[in-house]
Structure formats: structure tokens, C-alpha cells
Image: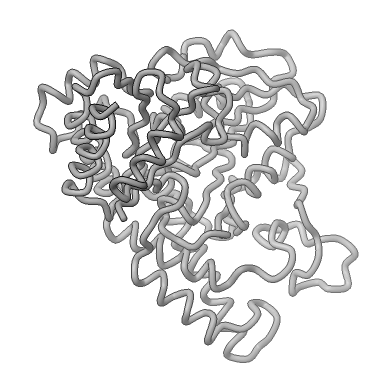
Length: 395
């Protein structure tokens, strides 16, 4: 099996992740619910995971990070804090984990468009402002094209207009270096099972210090907290305000190990490796008849052809992802053929990002997405490219 669906879930997981989950299953009790060793061990695991999360996100105070079951839960939390009657700015590149909570809120939403290559039209932001604009909700990297958002530019805009900035870090955390406090991000939502190489069912949310002074941080759930049990309401301080009930301690132990692995190998090195694989894949497939890439301009593709493939030019704002179609061929058919003939795992379809497919005109056809990881090799890329070539030339 050649696994190129890491934008959905990274596979395999590093060995330390497996060991951490097993250790917690065998030795960790209920965190914050006892003074005996097993309970204290669980509490230490969670505290260490907060510290690691803070390092990864560029945050000074680990208590500003609460754990969730995934980025979807974190985004539902954050978007739920936007007051009713607000206007919100988002983008056409968003995943349904952003879109559906925004729609459910009943607030008015305007979408920043992208150009033909999937790059956001940042110059149009001013034109989307309204008197009641309260927030910007935006992905850090597209799960369809892999294009990385210019977060500092968005943060500067949000700050200039007094807007809450909520960032969906599902595709960025673990590969793209994150500087949440330095960049002025109010809320950063992340998931554990993609680039952070942790277990499914893990994630978290960073909330800027002092945000609760102007925004009511209403939790999705209330219940057991391990402290102030006679109070009728959930404690308001972070992180317990957002962590009702028993946390997924084994999962978070695995997430912590995954984050430590990422920090050990450095997100920028991981990103460079994944980008290099993406460039090689494009170089190996660019001459196929009918091939069309999404999220890569022709100028970028030409530059890949001319430059040394093992160097990543700084103007290339992509994660390790290549999305494509072959003529009018159904994307699902291409994906199935890759699996059945060569054991290559890719993602085809809508990728839970309807506006991006409407933008590209691929609602009916879908898109074939190759998403590379730290554990993938150049040999695997060449094998997959050759398999795609065989499939295309046979038709």
C-alpha cells in the first residue's frame, strides 16, 4: 500500500504515539479526580500535552489551550461565540467544519473569493466589511489545493478593524510553522490525527488571553470538572471552562507524543520534505494528456520544471498536496483505478469543501487529491506517478 491520503488522516503513526496510547491505557487513571498515583499520572499527561501544544502553536500560557475531540468541535465552539446579528467574513476555500457552523448561526456571511489558481483575493477584503462585521473565520491551508493562507496579512486586517480572528488549522498544524500570539490570532483550532500524527478523536483550541473580557466563551457541554462541584454552572477559567467531563487521556497522550515528534523533526523540515515530494510528482506527471492541477499556477508549474526539484522556492505557498483531474474523467474512477491496480490510496470527491468545487467547476467531476507526508518517499511518488501514467495512457 502507498498511502497518499494524509490530508484526511496521517498514516502510519510514529512509534512513540503507539507507545504513549498503550501506556496511558495501562497506567493513567481519571485526571483531576483523585490524589492517588494513577490519577496524578493522568493529570501530568494532560499538563505535558498542553505544554507541548503551546510550544507548537507559539503560545506562552499552556492553560489557554483546551482539548477537544477534533477540529470540528473546536470550530463549533469558536463560531458559537460570535454574537447573533453579526456579519462574518469567511472564504470560498473553507471546509464544512467552518461553513456549516456559520450557516447554523444564522449570521450573515460574506465569502472572500479566490483566483483561478485557488489563491485568495486578499485585496478584496476591504470591500467585504460592513458596519456589523464582527469576525473572520478562515482556514490556514486549503484541504483541496494545499495553498497556505497569508495568516499574518489576515491578522493585521482583523486587528485594524477590531475583528475576532478564528483560524482553522486542520491542514496546517504539524507542517506549517505557527506563531499564534506573535501573529495576533485570537482563536486557533487544530486536530490531532492529520499533520500532528496523533490518534483520531483528538484536537484542541487556543483562546487568546483576555478574550473572555469581551466575548462570552460558552462551552458546548457542561458537567463534571473536578473542581467547585457545588457550583451550578461550569467554571469559567481556561481550560476547564471548555473541558466538561472526562477527557480522552489515552488519545491526548498519543497526541502529545505526535506533537513532540513533529517538534523534534521541526515543522519547517516536514513541510519542505512534503513540498519536495509534491514538486517531484508534478514533474513526473505534468506531460500527461488532459492533466489539470488545482491550486498551482502555470508559472509555478513551469518553475518546478526549471529549478532544482529538491529546493523549495519561498514564493511557493503550498502544503505537500497535489490535486488534479484528467480531462473529463470522473475523479472517483481515477482514485479507484489507482487503488485496484497499484495499491495507491488517494482521496477523490468533494473533500467536504463545496465552495471550492463550485469555484473550480468540479461539483460533478470531483477532484483527485494526493497528500504527502513525512513518511512518504520519492520512490513511492515515482511509483504512483507511473501508475497514473499507465491508467491515463490505457484509456
